[in-house]
Structures are given as structure tokens and as C-alpha cells.
Image 1: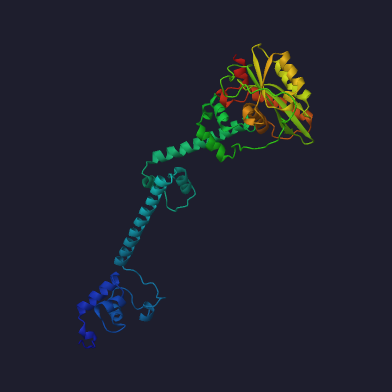
Image 2: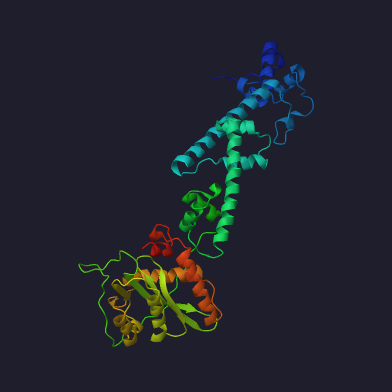
Length: 404
């Protein structure tokens, strides 16, 4: 059984004392760790050796404060400083590898690529002290020339975006809710090359400027299909005897839409050519009486240029089934066609024209019927002559109508 033997200073050779002092001053272990590691007896034996043989100043504080929690920070030896820097370097390398892995995962899994614009913002705002363009280029694996060329491209894109926004604003003075695809077509027709951008790029510019058109929905019933008048069959319905328009003035579609006023209510009767999408007749009125609806049909008949067979398609509203309206059909040799019951999808083209006028042009409530008629007249003129139509391969209805 080992028996405790008390040692004195003479029991430790000088070489041993110097070796312990060197290890402590190099930072390989603290004096407490050296005392436990070598089994040195006495709480202050190693500290006495440090004070007697050490190179550093170990007399500035007492041994009790050196081993306490609030022990003052001792100056580091070059060896200790090198070891500390090596630990910091190893930690920085692990940190850099971690963030590189995060960027790689964001790129591959979530599609978030590293944006040079964001990196440039960090440099210009001096968010990272000491970070230079040279360092950034080295980190990103690109040359300084490529870096400055990317900044120049970004500035060019910003100037181009401002020019496009100005042009779009000018177009929307007359067509406030013109869609992005139609704006893209108009910009492509411009003689200025700076306005020629891709469709997705235009969507991005308008989205960032909050200029995208948000759809609106409204519904007001203007059709009374429960009446005693005769109802005609649907000649445009899919089947063997279906009539499909192949030129202007072959099929007309008609409908009535609701137009709110600041003081009262108005209605708009429209007659549209199914082939060219041109509004060939319209009338704004304060009531749903038949003689008001007839005026839109008479306007279309006056502007008619051919004598070919013509089909007039509408819903089963009481105005279109009335005797007065049907007499015009017989007098001008017009064939009548109607929807099967109250189904708006069987008169979708007329409903679409109603929506375009109300959702793109008639955005503000007119004061009275006089203002309403003026607004509708201007809107129909812009729609027929200036608005590119998607179903017409971005031509205007008037261009298609005049082509035949």
C-alpha cells in the first residue's frame, strides 16, 4: 500500500523545475495543471518556481488571484500567442466551410443564387471593415474586370428600367389597365432599342415598381330571360351545323353591361364583330328599354360594309327577343342566334368585351349620363384603334377589320 511521503524543494531537481516553468510559460498547461500532472506537493510550489526561474513577470499579483475567476489577464508569450492564433485560424476555416456549404445548399435545393448586386451593396455600405474589391473577387473566384463589368451592367439595367417605366406610364395615361403582355408588344414595336426587353424582364420591372395590373371582379345581372317572346336556337354551339366566323361582318355578338354613375345608373349596349373583335355599335342609356338597345344595333347596321349573310348572337334577354328588335333582323336579312338559357359562357366573347371596357377604361364613375357617353365613346375609340388584342396576334381590332 503506497504511503504518503512529504517532499521538500530539494526533492525536485533544477532541470525538472525549469522544464515545468517552460511548459507553463509556453501555455501548454496552467500551473495548477502542472501541479496535478506531476504530483507536485504544495499549493504554491509551482508559482514559486515561476517567480524564481520564469521569464515573465509573475510577481504582479498573488497566487490566489491567478487561479480565481477574476484573475487578471497575464501577458502571453510568443508561443502562447501563436497557439491562440492557430486556434482562431482553425475556427475561421471551419466557419468559412460552414457558410460555403450553406450557400451551396441554398443554390442547389432552394434556387437562391449568390447575387453580385447584394455583394456590391455590402462593399459600398462598408458593412464589413477591411473588405476590398480585390478580396471579394478572390473569394468569388472572378477577376476585377469581370466585377466592374457586372456593376456597369447593373447600372445599365437600372437606367433601362427607368426608361421603360416612363414609357409604360405614358401608355397607361390612355389605357390605365393595359396588361403586361400587351405592353411588351408595344415596347417591341418602339424604334428605341433600349425599350426592347424580354417578357419576364418586363414583368420583373413592373413588379418591382408596383405597376402590375390586379384583376377586379364585379357582377350585375342585366338579363331577363323569363318572358313570353320567342327564343331562337344557338347557331354558334358546337355541333354539325355550328357557324364559325372566318371574316368580318359574318357573326356579331351583342350584350348589355352595367355602368354605375355617381348619380344613378347607366347601361351600355354593345355589338361586337366576332372575327375582328371590333365594337361596331354601342349606345349608353339610363334604362333597359328595348328602343335604347336597338340604337346600338342600328349603329352597327349603318357602318356595315358588306351584304354577306350575317348572324346576330346574343343572350335570351327580353330586349333581344322583343318584336321591335326582331323586326330589324327581318328587314336587314340578319339571322338570329341565342344562348340556351341563361348561360354567360355561350356568349363569352361579348362578356369579354364588356370586361375589357369596364376593367381597363371605365375605371372612374361618371358624374351623369353625359359624361358616361363621352367616356364610352373615347374608350371604344382607343379599344378599336390602339389596344393590341392577344387573340388577334397583338393587332388592333380595327387593323383586322380593315384587312378584309
